[in-house]
Image (cartoon, rainbow, N blue to C red; front, side, top):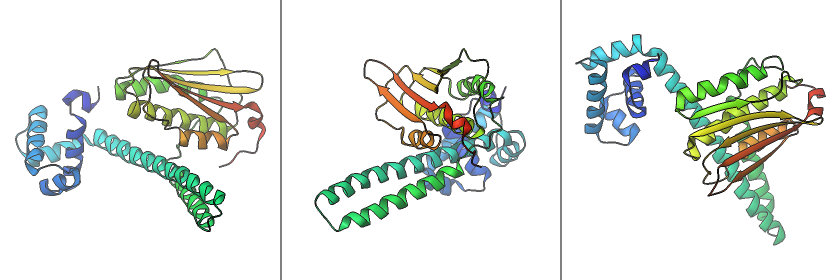
Length: 269
């Protein structure tokens, strides 16, 4: 059993506890979290009660020894989420600038070239930031199916969202780059499911035809908006395409199709 389950600490309590272990004062924590200092004190009291301690100094010592693993995972998760959000924002801004650029071209507006350069800059920065998120995964054709089998259990444990993987494939013949990008697409797709849909049930599915691999992520709730820009960018790196469907009366479905010819391409590091 992990520490978060053992002490039943909430997301906000983990944020406050992490900040405190990093040396921030109650006033600094309040400013960072944009809440009143009195609320910080109330949250600290709640943490002390749950863990069974009475003093802040004892709590810091206990957290740094007994909860360090959980706090480290929490901090990494928040940083990854912030990186993901920033990448999405940069790509969204690039798409908006592209609309303005096309309008400027149609009107022979001299600003068209400047807008084009701005769009290129936004895309370049988004791609650089995305590389910081590139998974350090030991995934190749021999381990990819097992990766997909193991991921639902971890995701369900972290989020409480029922998740399962189905596939009739016994093995896959993919280049390592295709495995890497599809693994990252699944991870980012699940982040979208968690953030945007309020989903309670998720299905991952991998199928194959003679010419294509098809990876499907399905949720039982619709998304409020199409947030698949990063997924499309990743799929494009391996010659793939992404199709997203969402309806108010149904759920959310993201289908990634990748041609098998990519397994013969020269792999990139």
